[in-house]
Amino acid sequence: MQRLFTRLSEKDKRSYAAIESVKLGHGGVEYVSGLLALIQKR
Image 1 (cartoon, rainbow, N blue to C red):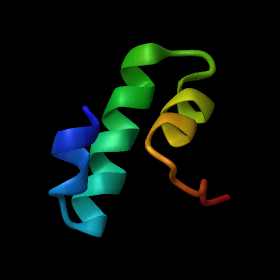
Image 2 (cartoon, one colour; image 1 turned 45 degrees about the horizontal axis):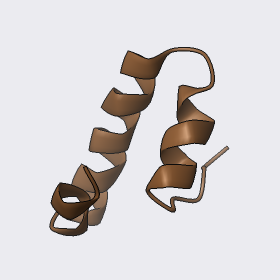
Image 3 (cartoon, helix red, strand yellow; image 1 turned 180 degrees about the horizontal axis):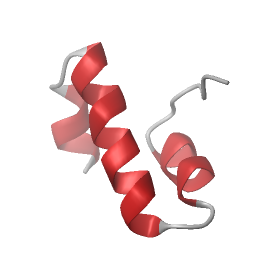
């Protein structure tokens, strides 16, 4: 997951992270943002 992520544009990174977090369900946003070192937008 991280190898693919490093090759994406910023827009694509956020879209990919959003899709993965939805697939995980509850707590997915925190997990994916931590895994991929993203700052969550509120």
